[in-house]
Amino acid sequence: MNSSGGAVDASACSNHDLGGPPSFDAWSRYQELTPVRSAMRSRDWDAVAAALSTLGPQELSLAHELVADKTGVEQMLERAVSAAPGDPLARTLLARRYVSIGWRIRTGARAEHVAAERFEQFREWLVRAEQLLVDVCADHPDYAPAWEVRLLTARGLELGQSEARRRYDKLAALAPHHHRAQRTYLQQVVPKWGGSWEAAEAFVAECASGAPEGLPSRALLASLQVERWLELGQTTFLDQAALERLREVAGASVLHPDHVPGPDADSVHAELALLFTFAERHADAAPHFRALGDNPVSPGWDYLDNKTEWYARSRAQALGGPVPPPPGAPSRGRRATAIASLVVLAVMFLGAGTAAIASTVAAVGGEPGSVTAAVVFGAASGLAAFYLVRALRPLTRRRNA
Picture 1 (cartoon, helix red, strand yellow):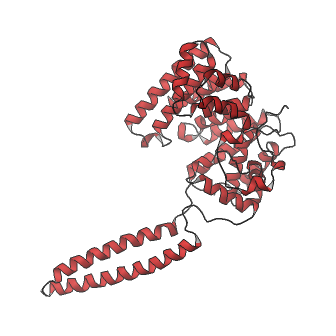
Picture 2: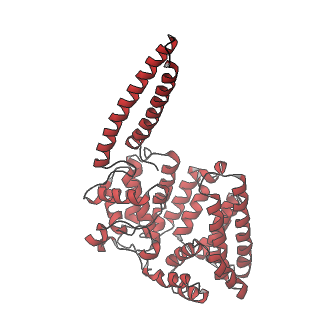
Picture 3: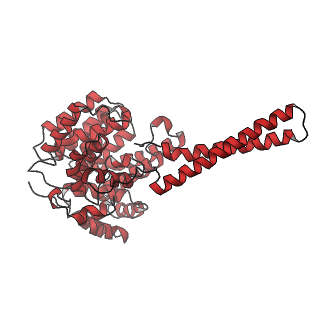
């Protein structure tokens, strides 16, 4: 196999690589993307296109995603399409940018939680993208990047399982073992987008059986297990048999002697590190954290609030060193302060509540001013109770995934 370059080899990480605060900046992890980033900043389309032309398939797919996520880049891309209407690259990137805009409007919430106005705007942007892509695929039917984006529009426009599969099969014929596309299509066949766990399992098995050892496609199971974890809200489904399957796919892919580092493999490392961490199998997570180092990638971790803090904590659990508290939990000093505050608030609550009761009893007995006192002390006890609950919340907060 030829190396596509760019990733951090698990065996090559030094202490320096693992000692600093983590950063999920993909641009800085893959130095070969630096020319693309520089050209993007100057809004020089010719330079962007030239830089993209030097990339291998994995880095090119990632670069397309990063370019499309850049705010305001559509202006440069629209000018490029106007200047060269037949250019498949410019049209495909513009379509991907429209998809990115639409999905940002829609948000990642389930359909039933998306406002009708947002959903309509989302569909409008995806329709614009699909119109561009239809023309690209008509003019250049073997242009794989366009078919990759059409997996996203098929899902967002709800074109159905058959059409989505047709598009995936077309892409797979052009670019076998395209792991990023496989992860995209997997979203189509899980339950939240109208599929089933059985269909997802079958697709994972299909991708693994057709791929040589050492390729990320052998580990698509990790993506499926992340989706199960997200759906179920816990990791009890990761029993011994499931964990052993994850160890097997790790050994057949990113931990295999024939493995070649790259962005797709890094996605596998990220998902396996996450799953083994939350299953409390920190020794199994360790090699994946070593491969990711201080500059990890987002798959899986994007589902967490405070992903940087969770990654730092999880890495420390796997590799040793001081383990910071879970995000949202107070530090030792803050915890002591919180406990002291709770004591004060509890005393205030009890005192104000007792006074309110006494004043109410006096009011019933007709003593002057007792009604006003009862109202004042009742309000004070209610306020104390409110702050007591707020103070307790950080101490009882659990992991949010």
